[in-house]
Image (cartoon, helix red, strand yellow):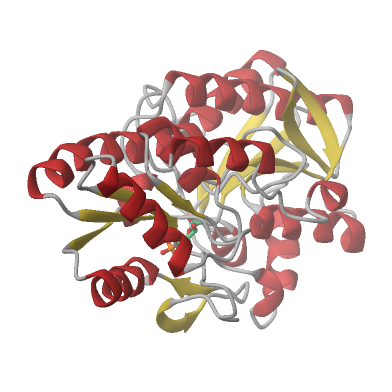
Amino acid sequence: MAKKIGVLTGGGDSSAINAAIRAIKKKCISYGYDLFGICNGWDGLIKGTGYDLIKEGATGTICVGGTYLGTSRTNPYKKENGVEAVRENIKKFKIDALITIGGDDTNGVTGKLLAQYGINGVGIPQTIDNDIACTDYSIGFDSALEVVTDAVDKLHTTASSHHRIMIVEVMGRDAGWLALYGGLAGGADVILIPEVPFDYDEIIQVIEERKQRGRDFSIIIVAEGAKPKGVGQQVTASERVDSFGHVQLGGIGDFISREIEKRTGYESRVTVLGHIQRGGRPTAFDRILATRMGSKAVDLVHEGVFGKMVCFKDNKMVAVPIEEALKQQKPVDMELYELSKLFH
Ligand code: F6P
């Protein structure tokens, strides 16, 4: 009997997930496996919603953002009888192995289900935050970075025309990869990341020094999770908490704008890039990364290697135990952060 793989996508989406699903499908066909597409992440395995992906769908999607299967931030461990329902549906659909595409929350469940119930699973890292430690890059980061870089480029001309301070708020809950890379690539003057609490005096010093050099505008890029020195809490957009315990962040850009205007009298404006960072056409890099990761995940299932995360290390696809991969988050490279100060 052919093996049957179930694939689901969970957590915040990004641009190259479909490229991974497409590769999983192609690889399944080459091994003669069945592929069951589970709708809306773990929610689909609780409710039992999905369909035969070999028969329908996931073709012609390499250049399409989002996730063909739908996603959710559902945690079966936080739903009444959630895990029991997942186990029953895996049996009902005769799924031999799961491939889960998502961040630490989604893949954390995969690791737990294997450890507790022997459910075979392989994880694929996907998050624009790029904060999964075992892999150099997660699917979606590079495409989001393009959006951020483009926005910073565009803000330069209007900032200089109006002689303003422009603040651009980007995603990045606990790690500032998008802010750092986007700031460096776009030539932002100040980069604020969750890893390093910031100081208003230092920001203003950069703005003033630029003024003295005749540069009467500045671009500040800030990750949503950044906070000033001495302030314990991140700025939240609402009190809502998802089933993995994450509160909705947003609004730090406004705080900074008001504080800078108050202290300097300079006019400032805020742009919040928000979910635009998660949409649009995936970059070539992301498409290839996703294709390689999807293909490797099916290879691991074929070899009977479970409980692993597919990771991209030194241009190679490797398998890392899920619990090791998720032990800690990946902060930005501080050497690169120091380098960014050269351009203040
Ligand atoms: O997936 C991670 C992330 O992009 C975070 O940077 C951000 O805080 C969060 O998603 C927002 O997700 P949503 O508004 O879709 O719940």
